[in-house]
Image (tube, rainbow, N blue to C red; front, side):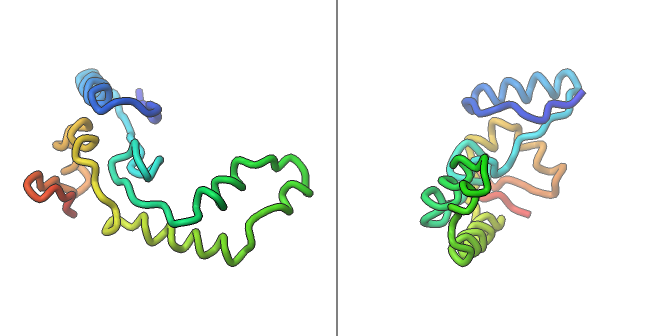
Length: 124
């Protein structure tokens, strides 16, 4: 059995569900950057203009070709995507210590990572 999506909840809830899945030998995944400005273990800042441009278009009505034509300028979209890609590089993320702790930091060694609690850094 494998659990691939939990939704978003509190760190206490995450800890309880991870402990339960580990105890019952259930595989699990938590997305490191699904919601990059919060509710993830590797948050990073979204580029300025992301919400107003990318999110607004993604959430707009796109049922017809006419609707799709009302998209962001290509140069603007590419610039935002490049800045997003830069911001989400591991070196630019700010690990969320509470979230990581709720997922059981011992599991980090499975991925060649370790948590330095004193410095508050996730190390490769």
